[in-house]
Image (tube, rainbow, N blue to C red; front, side, top):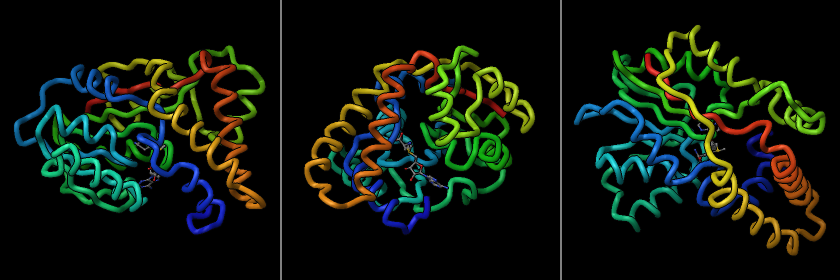
Length: 251
Ligand SMILES: C[S@@+](CC[C@H](N)C(=O)[O-])C[C@H]1O[C@@H](n2cnc3c(N)ncnc32)[C@H](O)[C@@H]1O
């Protein structure tokens, strides 16, 4: 999608104000953090492709350490700064508008890279490759990636994801892929079905209903709405065949 296009504008309008811009939940973020080995007291932590930063806020609340939050969309970072202020967590949140594939940090300096529902934007392999030199000796990556669970795949779901995310692989393929850039997998698990709904699809459906009434002759907005409805419908029908796998990786 062209970043400056009307299509992008319609997408952003539909996605404005959502607590998250992808599946996940506060509880899931908190529990996942609890599964990782303890971090040093002065740990350098980044949330890449943070969006409105729901995960960043959980990390900040639990760790009381600075989280560097990177996203290419300034409006999401603005939302994050506002929420951080409301929750009195702003002293832990540093926002940077930029590219998560070319993160500015010293080599070997980052202890933890967090990235929920965003690594696909630059590509799983490319992101892991570009982040590895930035990680400290025992540095870790905690990321979610859309993954097929088995070979049982409905043609309708395959066709949808072939169009929207042709690089989507199985969990087994992703586990194999992490070895090439030099990671080991500490643990991986599927985020619960509820993560798709309460903080993502439910609020998105509310936006859809509201904007449907306002779309009028705005064809770009109508297309954005139809795409979102199709995605939700595919998940509703075939969500047991694919989902977001949380991969906890170490250098
Ligand atoms: C599906 S959203 C997930 C956002 C957030 N992690 C969450 O769970 O709510 C993907 C995010 O990645 C951001 N993004 C996409 N490409 C990016 C890039 N190259 N550099 C930085 N951010 C990027 C988008 O702006 C968006 O906020």
